[in-house]
Image (cartoon, rainbow, N blue to C red; front, side, top):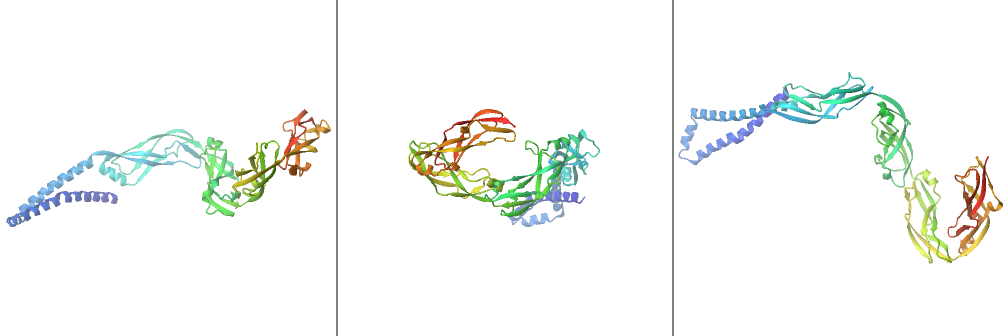
Length: 452
């Protein structure tokens, strides 16, 4: 009631100001101007204005004008109009522990119909909003009406949409294994890496309709690097890390997850390893020449990454094109980071290749190794002694090839995919010093594979 009285008072205050400004003040100024314009008749005008009848007639005239204005205003307020309240939230009442509800609109539009005064009062009055009571409904599909509760009975209301087709499902729960996913990992300092993530549990409970639960392929704790207060070596605790459920295609599944968030401990380390370069010449230099030396601006490089990645790195390969090379040459190479390496101590390398006169030399009795052979299932036998060892021809400058021994050469055949039978298999030769060329004088060897 106090709000209604304040609204009425505010209305008449607003009504008085234009009457005073546009009616009473202009009339008063006009009278004073007339009075000042003639000194001779000023006394007569003052006497006329002082008469009781004159004041009565002026008051009556002003009252009539005020009545007409107020009456017109009241007519305006009495005319029927409508106003739309957009995006009003919908409150749903149901047993959230037992059921899942789909099809309820998040918001609706409400149209209020009445005169301007009633609409104004209705907008200022308290309301229980749009309520959808489903407490008496069971699982299944239902057509329900949305109602708007308002204390002002003199206005009409319409809700859009007024009807909703909803589906109620029985809520089920299942246990899922929790994994982690690191967001914005590129924002982590390139010399730092995450060595361990402790979420405190590996199991969570998901709840929802049966079809929703069946869609969940994995549940992940989303660890955002942007939420790290500081990036430094040590253990950091992230509070309230959100959990999300995903289907097999990576789409988010709208299910309830218990718990909703977790506190996660992240261990940050700075793992590095210093390794040499391995220069790999591609192609053959000009006839009669060979590589006599390869010198580098840096002999070693420090790489940063996870322990797992660094354990697999023994050197950084760098390829250079020497095809047709007939003179000494300097190469400036932009280094490529191996997969998993986050940072390197240098990004560029200068390589100087010097040439010399080519010579040849043979090394005999290089044993043949057998790769990708399962000796638990099969036995392998070389057809002859010549199929057990080979002779390798070396080409390079004399100082290089004279320093190469049989221990620096590896000869092997790849038996991946071979089963029982007798086969002629290609021989592959590799050497540790890539300034020389290695050619097997025996191109193929014969082996027999039998089942155990």
